[in-house]
Image (tube, rainbow, N blue to C red):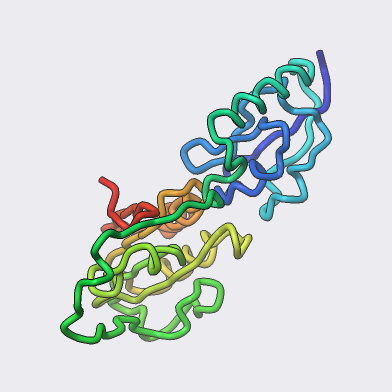
Length: 233
């Protein structure tokens, strides 16, 4: 049948996961850091997800699609409730208690020294051009990584210019500004440090797009931190 249904523009999607959280029917999911319409028959065409999207990536179209199946939606909701009774929605908002056994009792021999090399460090606030960008090794890090990974300063920030952000909380697409930063300055390398949660994929996507759009060939790498503070291979 021809009916109204949502369409997601993958180019505009920043991977924040807000639409998946807003979709009560479970029609939207996060796949490889991007929002996807998982099943046509789960979409009721009411569009609760549209106002939740910060980049305007979701629109209505009329096309051939399976009829909305309320019974299938209810069955899927029940199944998800059984599999994850304490949480539904964005994986990044799932609460959990982290226990680092014995680590808190380990004495520190010296007070850590900050390795932050410039200010401001928020992507939204940092200027496109600044003297410290010339010849810099750039670190683009998700906000949460500094709290999840205990040695971020020494292992990743030392000797680098650090820019931080959260695509879900800032509700912006960083790629345009990052593109200008890389294109207009002598950046030597780019390291992207993100969390394992799907919404953090927006930061990785923005940085990769900026590297591509800058027209420069620069060494880069992505490091993913798990919520328990370890580096995922």
